[in-house]
Amino acid sequence: MDGKGGKMKITNINEMVREVLEVTGFMNVLTVE
Image (cartoon, rainbow, N blue to C red; front, top):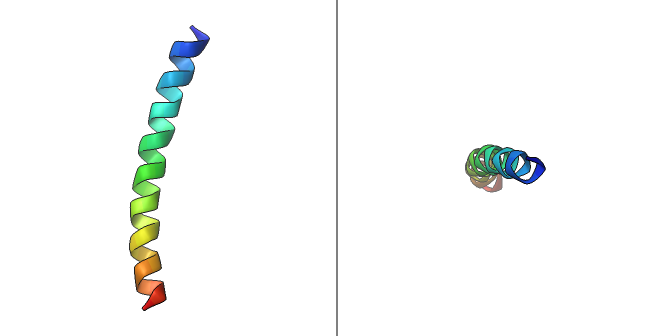
């Protein structure tokens, strides 16, 4: 159960991190400019 729960949690975190990275990357590009 721990492995399954951890995997699902990691997946959710990865998805959130991916979205944050995309938004952060976009903001970084604007900041760099």
